Amino acid sequence: MIPNAKKFCFGGIAPELEEKLDKMFSLVVATGENVWMPSSGELPGLFSQAETLSEEPDDQINESNNSQTNANEELDSGTPGQSSHSVAASKRKRKGKRHEMGTKQVMLAYVEKLFSSSEAIMQRVTAPVIPPSIYLLREAIQELEKYPEIFEDRLLYHFATVHFQTPVNRVTFLSIPEERRVEWLKTHYMNSQI
Image (cartoon, rainbow, N blue to C red; front, side, top):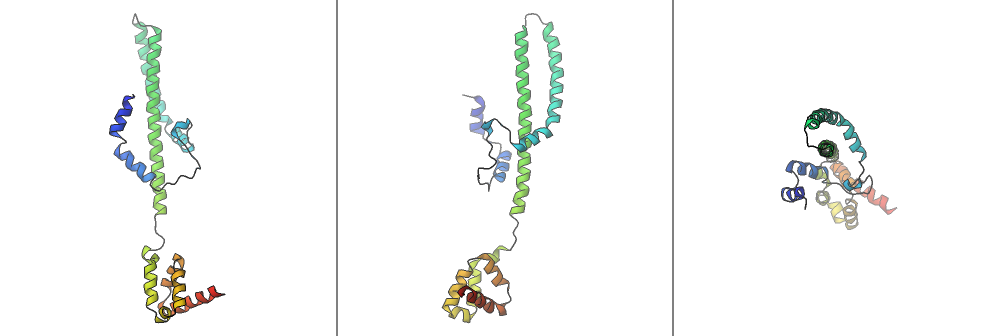
């Protein structure tokens, strides 16, 4: 069993990251286009851009680690009883840590970039174009009932209830001045009969 897996089972995802992921993917629907899976072994297009942005910090880390490695080699070569095999093994361990640190930073930068872009898209999508109260069918029917000539003509009334199932027709009817609503509805009724 992997010890880190046990920690994950009990600890889970950090609350801050989980909140960001929930916001990012709350309205996402899988379409099959631009699919990327972490197990695929390939990096997605945006990921390579994030990697180029974060190459500079990795280079600085690598340079400082290289200078530490050179200093350790000088010390290690002077100690008797230590084989060159153990020195090479310790170098491999250090490289693995550096690679993990760089990958973690790149992934965090990638998640941040995805989060900010999804937030911007959500703000654009959720902006209401027409006030939501205009969309209610109930309001349009209540307005219909105010006009006795529409309410008493069953065919016209039935046509109006079906016609107002389309939000555009409801909005138009409620936007027209009250004196012209009956005429507008009768015109649409006559046009539908043709």
